[in-house]
Image (cartoon, rainbow, N blue to C red):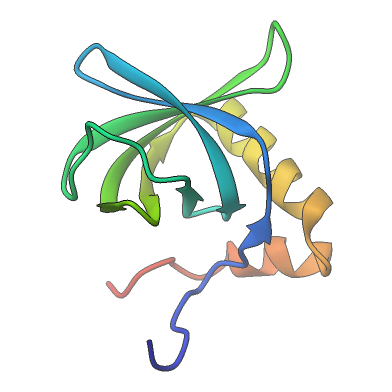
Length: 118
C-alpha cells in the first residue's frame, strides 16, 4: 500500500472482542485499535460490507459497544470501520487508545478533524 492516509492513530492491542451481526456472534483477538476501527484475527461468517456490532468487555459492568461496518474479511484479518457509538463507549474507547498510545496528547488533537473527507 502507498502512503498511509489514516487520520487516526492505531495502537497495538491484544484482547478479546465479540463481533456480531443478525444474532450471529464470534469472539476474536485484536491486532490493533483506533478511534475509527479495529483489526482482528480472521474469522468465518463475515463479508466486506456487513453491518456489525463490536463489543469490548472491560469489566462485568462495563462493555464498550460500537456499531461498525466490515471493510475487510479474509484469512489474514477482519477489519471493522466504526460508524456509531454512544457517549459512554466513546469515552472508554478514547481512554483505551490514549492509555496505549506513545503520544496520548495527540489522540485528542486528532478528534478535532473529521476521520474522513466530507
